[in-house]
Length: 358
Image (cartoon, rainbow, N blue to C red; front, side):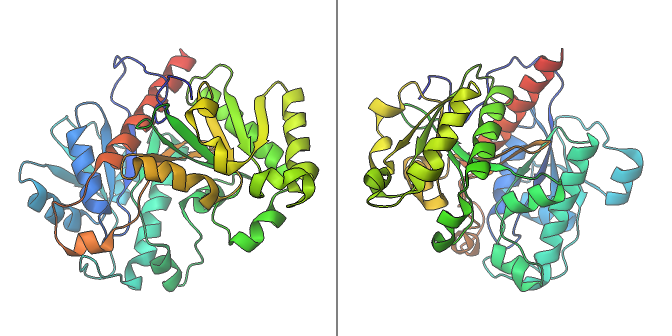
């Protein structure tokens, strides 16, 4: 792919005030609180990270990680009425979102599922109001939220619903490969048996348009080049292994080209992820979750990021799950590299957006 780092927006100078990023701490029994606190503290001079979670619990976690970490609790009421105070670099703000049950590391508790969702609601609302420049999310446990009685498919779908966004695109990225790699998805969290029915000319066309627009706007790529996989083995092999390439994907690509988008394919997914094909490209669009993401996660797990495109605000996330077994083993074991990358990329997107407005 192109030389510009895949997990980063175009580099911008640190001349503007620190970007203000809401950081939801995710499943409290997992590693989310630890990686969020460690990354926010490490980047405190460059980024004003505002943690959202149970203030008392996060203070306890922070004290065990490093007694030098300074967290300052704010109530949701104060945020709504007074806005966000300007904290110095030596403090991290926490918007208090109390949990409903005691946390036992590594042990899921459905009683806390709704509290986790409330942290997302606070971040979304603040981003929409302009209190936050963007949001970064630590991993949550989908099963806990569903067990709490709330149907929940994932961050991506929830953010789209709450922001009234008709369609979003999930993209993972890393700059730890040569060349760097971005992989976007035409469908997200679907059972494999439902993927083919979900692929339509209209939905794929909208995905390509969103991907093209946000690669320009959020990554500063003037004319992004997008490579597209087929759905079936060997990209359908001329229709013998499926007709989705002939009936849906190819017509959508031809229409996108007519709109001036540099898109090509469909290519067999099992051979596309080679340097000779990716060199000079900016993104791969895969048809479903486990078609494109295993390649990226194998190459960079724990240091890649998840980006939701198409939203009216910036959102990045880690590329890993809650790691309950690691959390159960005690603090100090979780690698916060992916959270560092997610914060840095969100901040770079904010700075790029600010430059575009000047």
